[in-house]
Length: 174
Image 1: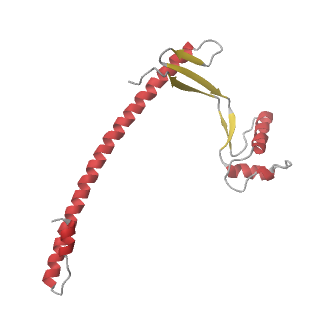
Image 2: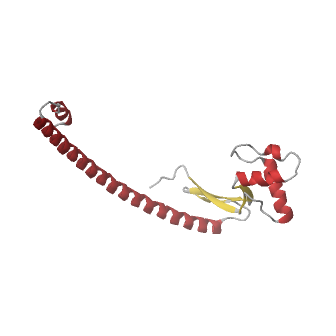
Image 3: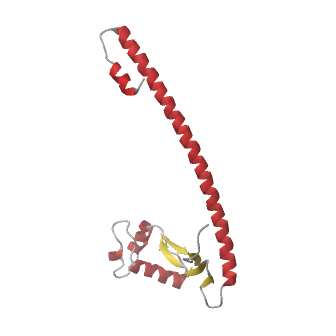
């Protein structure tokens, strides 16, 4: 029985036996629909788990291959160059980012900035959690250079080298 037909047949009456039969039919229909939903959810879960496993496996393969390419390409770098060309395949570029200070906790930064008597420093501290301005970062960098101290709320991000692969236009993915 289709749900539309069933709901039309479910008419409350003054007869307790009829009402009981309607409730029993409704409960059976409800149990059937819940079982179908459970089956469908189990199927979706199985598909999702298979997809997640496959995606995870492919991500691990890409990470391993990328590490191999990076290691070998660094060895192939010509002197004074930041890229390696593999004709017909790709250009592998390397970029080095110098170490820098980053605001990790704006509230902690606002705390020490309020305690310092640096002219104009406080007016650069925003009232919200928006990024701290360059004046505050410059003060933190000066402190780091002069004392070697990383002020509260700041984080020293180390130098890092990143790799980018630009595929050649004629190279196909396959």
